Image (cartoon, rainbow, N blue to C red; front, top):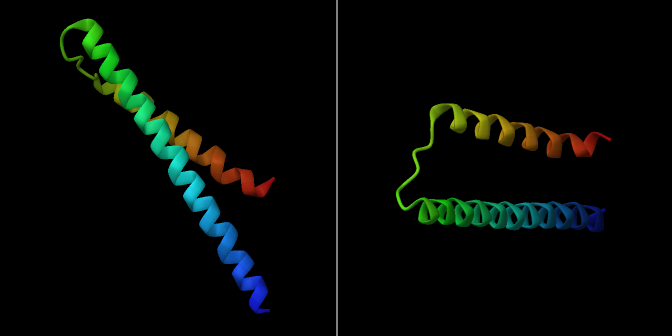
Length: 72
């Protein structure tokens, strides 16, 4: 039984580490693209409330899709 708990902890740790790494890479990529757009425009871009809400809804949908992967 001890091996079962080690296996359970092992895959959970791997899932958290992989998810964290993917999230960090996506965040860095998004920040890079945002900075590049600001530099091309020559002035800071203002993020409209509508755009922020669209991003938030998209992120919530993505999290829901990832969470539902375990139920298939």
